[in-house]
Amino acid sequence: MVTVSVEGLSVALGRREVVAGVTARFGSGELVGIIGPNGAGKSTLVRAMLGLVPARAGSVAIDGVAVGRMAARDRARALAYLPQGQTLHWPLDVERLVALGRLPHLAPLSRIGAEDRAAVAEAMARADVGHLSHRIATELSGGERARVMLARALAVGAQGLVVDEPLAALDPGHQIDVMELLAREAREGALVLTVLHDLTMAARYCDRLILMDQGRVVAEGAPAAVLTAETLRRVYGISAKVDLSGETPMVVPLGRV
Amino acid sequence: MSIASIEVHRARHPALLPLLIGLVVIAGLASLGLGAVPLPPTRILAAALGDGDAITRTILFDLRLPRAVVGLLVGAMLGLAGAVLQGYLRNPLAEPSVLGASNSAALGAVAAIYFGFAEWHAAALPALAILTGLGALLLLFALAGRSESPLTLILAGIAVSTLAGAGISLSLNLSPNPFAAMEITTWLLGSIENRSSQHVLIALPCIAAGIALLLIDGRALDALALGEDGARSLGFDLGRVRMRVLLGVAIGVGGAVAVSGSIGFIGLIVPHLVRPLTDRSPSSILLPSMLGGAALLTFADVLVRLIPTSSELKLGVVTAFLGVPVFLVHLLRERRLW
Image (cartoon, helix red, strand yellow):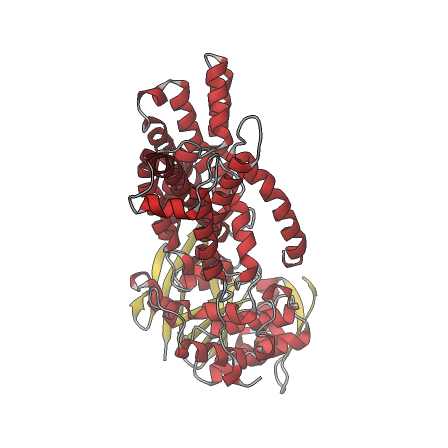
């Protein structure tokens, strides 16, 4: 079980206040989507939750402990993070790459152990990349690479998973694969927090949405409550066809207003 | 594939480390045995055991041994520094000179020659080289600030390196007589000829400290393959990593340049040569690059002695000539991965 609570959090990058007074709570077993226009402060909010950028005001606590006071390794073991962009600087093979997720668990000078190997294998099975284990990760297709990077984050074995824009540059089939995977992690008890741009995917898979605009949370709650035509017009400046009533919710942007 | 069959495989080819250790031993023995007067292993052994004639002992202990030890130390330091910097900066072009460590240490040495300090005491030149190397590190910190971006650091390193290079050019430009200019140029070409045990004593602590600082952070370098946020989210304190890496390079490479002059290419090519025999993670190439650097530089130094030329070839020249073709062949084979 893990809970993350954000209280009146403000974050400044340079002189610009990018996150302004955000309060939110997250707990195990939910898939939460953070949505909003480009530059709304979504990525900065999740980075602050992980302690990667300092808060200017307010606080973030993981299981009641302020993020700034946690040992870096403890924080790393509590929340796994997949940054946007799927950065990988060296042509590692897939298995080696996924094993990087075990770094927070390794004592100095110790080798990777049986438990770590099991965690790596399980993460690869969950992300369905076992058959790629000896491929070079930089040579994979975008869809394969997205799943491999997710496997790397899963290998941490953390109770919380924070994923920034996992669907960028993926075809519809791979988008569904990734969302199914995140939803399954949440069903099995993890806290999954993801920054998304695809509103239909957000509506269909997320238990809860947080809509941000200019650093603030402007709407929060079940997808049907957040994704109204009126809100989309106000925040994104678009008109949209919104149908959240049926089995398959749909948000189709139509044009600028 | 069943879960049970997945195994996190070895980081390196199993024969790599034994092979490299073998090469280091052979290079060291060749460096002791080969030269103007060849010493067969039996004579080396006899001299080492305290027997043997005085001439053999003099050649061995006063000439060859310090030269071999300096060669191994400098090569190890340059190879390791190259491997660490490539990993830390996430740039396969990085080498010990990118952060200005080589050039600024060379500037100190050149200043020692230019102002005549080098004639006061044998330790003056290396000591000044190490001091300017550390001074350049402070400048680098001031220029790069707290930024963790590798690009900021590379740009700051280029600025420091160029400034030191300009200082070297200035000293050549203003050198009081052609002999001083000649001496400076000769020194800049890089050589470990005529090194004494004093040089070993100067280089050893610096290089030992440098190696110790650079071997610590292999795992952080692996994590940096995922970018800065990726590494920090895995629990690494990148500020401390940077401090250790920069200190290690400044002290270690400073100490190496102080006794050998500028020797290029070892730090660049050795990591590339050993990488295909590993899993290509930054941590897995650290030890192999250290051993490979020691062996390669020492072999090049043996070659310098054996090639018959009117004046002895300088080591830096040979490593460059040896390095380029090897590097090119390797690059063409591996380029699909970049």
